[in-house]
Length: 71
Ligand SMILES: [Zn+2]
Picture 1 (cartoon, protein in one colour):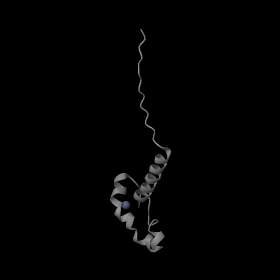
Picture 2 (picture 1 turned 90 degrees about the vertical axis):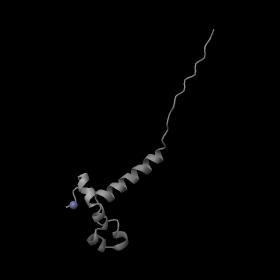
Picture 3 (picture 1 turned 135 degrees about the vertical axis):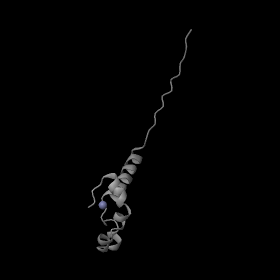
């Protein structure tokens, strides 16, 4: 007497485009939180953005808590 057995293999397939999109979001977020010294706002506000440092002031405590050197 023969027996048939069924084996279910579950494969989760993450699309490569999702990994690339998340990597870009991560890199942009890391730059904003850790390294921006007015570069992003300089696109709109020019040289004044490097003196105002809005994003730097916004993320300053988080930078120090995370160990990023900023000054
Ligand atoms: Zn600082």
